[in-house]
Amino acid sequence: MDYATRESLAAEFRTLGIAPGDVLLVHSSYRSLGFVVGGPQAVVEALLDAVGPDGTVVVPAHTPDNSDPASWQHPPVPPAWWEAIRHEAPGFDPRRTPAGRHMGRLAELVRTWPGALRSDHPQVSFAAVGARAIEITRDHELSDGLGDRSPLGAVYRLGGRILLLGCGHDNNTSLHLAESRLPGAPRHTTGSSIRRAGKGHWTTWSEVDVDSFDFASLGAAFDATGAVVTGKAGAATARLMSQRDAVDFAAGWIPANRPDWK
Image (cartoon, rainbow, N blue to C red; front, side):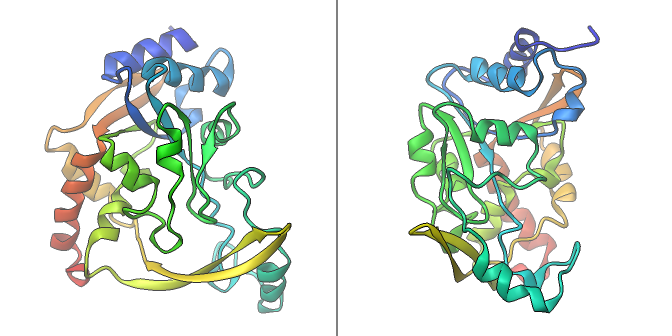
């Protein structure tokens, strides 16, 4: 079949191994699916069909542009603009602020889905729809954005799974949870505008300086363990795995391959 539908995608997700009741953290490239009858809405509905009413779909809804303009590189902005960017922005609001442009069409649709909840981190929020959405999004520590006190940590505790839908491990945000747990991880200071009383307020904090530069290699090593199930969803390659298995593997792989992180 040269196209996909809600029904065909839900069937492929089930064949891959997604089951009712799953907590499913989804990273996706909508374009990789090929033509989908009904567009992104059909894909989200297929994911919700696969996990059922007792399951939960989780997506990253990050806002990386809400960061210190002094660190911007692609493109940089003039130093004369920095203070205005820090202090004149309306500030992150989980209900109003759209996910960053690189998060993709499916993530933004899940963020706005009826009943969706979103964590309140101004840079690395997550959105969730389903039975465990409150539990996943309610606690998100500012200084532990991708650590145990974040939705990633909640997904880990709930025994959740990761679906890479048409994308690779370089997009596998859960691997940052392993970085955040390492005692030798480098740290840096960052900042964001946070909405309070209708206005943006510039706030700074210290956090682990996460880095995905070697996640493709890390992911290839994890794939080689046989822990990842690979299949098709529409025209895309889909990879399904236990988040705990991926994070625990990364916690050993990173110190062995990054001498500065021991």
